[in-house]
Length: 163
Length: 252
Ligand SMILES: [Zn+2]
Image 1 (tube, helix red, strand yellow):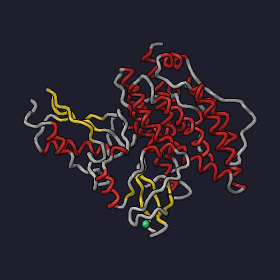
Image 2 (image 1 turned 90 degrees about the vertical axis):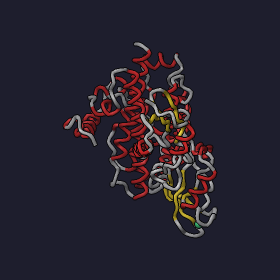
Image 3 (image 1 turned 30 degrees about the vertical axis):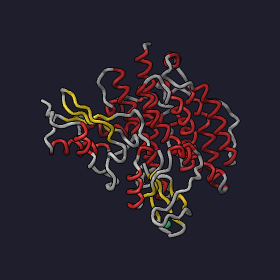
Image 4 (image 1 turned 120 degrees about the vertical axis):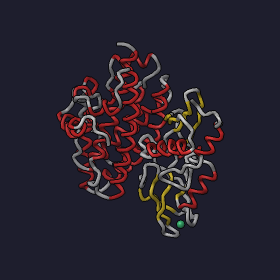
């Protein structure tokens, strides 16, 4: 039996608080990973989309969602992974970008920057906002980030790659 | 051959390419010349594991035999693998890895860009993610090929000798079967004959900048499409599938 006392927006509000396991200052909703909630006779279907195809955080996110649903006695619930439309960093809200910057991660440029082979994109330092930065490595601690160095304040920082 | 069989073969081919590349790249874990490169190579491997998982899972769904991505990866023998030969060759050195990945990732940029408009919705959705990742792989590896080719005498020698070996396996990327023709007529597959010219132009531009010479010998070794592999794939699968075959129902 579906507990129909919960509406779609109530569930979205509930799940919107779940943090991204790798960047806990932003939520899965702010990242654009939480796509939809479908309520049918059979129960609640939470639709999510992966950031990267090999994103190891997806399993954890699924567990967190099911845990949250269980905690609030909303059953039966399941999580469905969708690939269409493909996730893009353009879906990140301005608030999420600002949160990333404050956390020390330079937010992604527009996804069109992905098309350049030898990217000469200017990435601003999230600490001092200097534009004199250089890439140390295109691949950082996770698939979604690159490693940069600021030539002004000399700090190293991560850049969330546009996707 | 039915459309379903053709689509199954196509997904297996794409999935196997991703899986085999992923395996070769991950062999660099803790062995790369610098820490940043260790991270880069394993990150690329992770992208390809994800891609392989989606494609092999979809292949299982198309076939309707209920096989999971793990069943597909760990319970098929060498002759059932449909990956391109170029991806299974063992890494002789860092230059070999970079030249190979540059050749293959450049191809994949065009391949997946074309597949974004596949009439098969699932392939199109996977391609939309894969193309973005492939662009990062191409950018990264082509920069390295230029650095190595236009670097020291030693790095140039190694990059050139890698290219000399790898070149005769690039033809496999464009090998087609009757199944491809069927899928092409349905708008599901990518037309590799159209990709070839663009690919060659891009590769030649990178090689020019890298001061590397395109091998004159145009002999091409193919066979991956028929499941005819080099001696190296069997050894790779023996290692990759060992745990799963020893403890078939083991859960991580
Ligand atoms: Zn700075």
